Image (cartoon, rainbow, N blue to C red; front, side, top):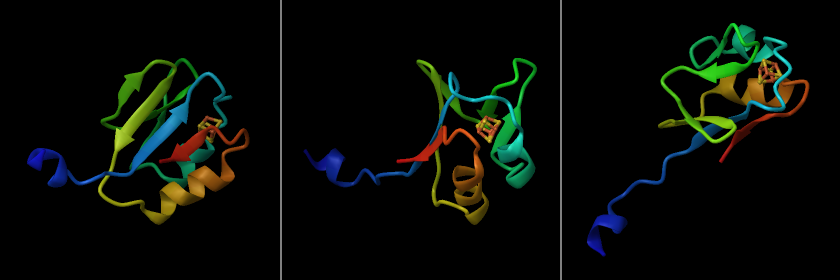
Length: 80
Ligand code: SF4
C-alpha cells in the first residue's frame, strides 16, 4: 500500500480534558497552542475533540509544549 509508505507520522498533543483542573499553567507557558476556555478546560488551538480528549497533530514538538507537559499539575497533557 504505497499511500501508507508516504504518510508521515505526525506527533500529536493530547489533553485529557476530564482530568484538567483549569490551572491555566499550559496557557501561560505556551499560548501558541493552549487556551483555557469558559468551561475551565484547556483546548488546543486548531485542535479537535476526540471523545473526552482534545487533540492536535503538529510538525514538531516545540520546547514550550514539553514544558506544558512537564508542569501540568495533574499530568493530563501528553505527546504521542
Ligand atoms: S496545565 Fe493541565 S490542568 Fe492546567 S489548564 Fe493546562 S491541561 Fe488543565
